[in-house]
Length: 106
Image (cartoon, rainbow, N blue to C red; front, side, top):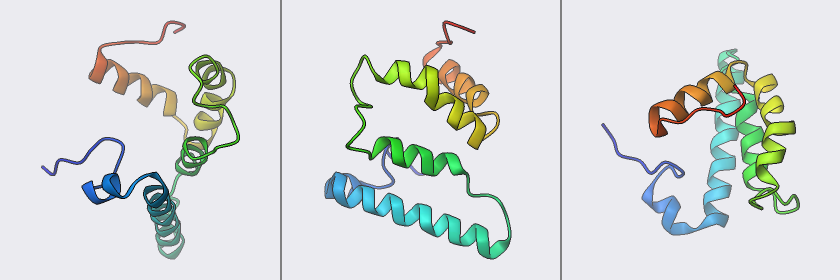
């Protein structure tokens, strides 16, 4: 089993920094979309592009500790669920498995 950092694809991406790492992530998303188009498969998920936009956007105050939970609850989780049906259920299972936590409102 290959050990890969959770938020990066390789050690080189981590050492290169956020600018080059973000560019590499965008190129990887483009290649996934190209491959899905060539094969005729709808394997590429729009939620990948949503997450890329959220985590690499400098205009929105998404990383403020008091703004992000409200945006997640009110808007972003709905977008992710619409883009990838079952997102919230998979997220809850992953949170329970990794951290033994659950949602407070479900």
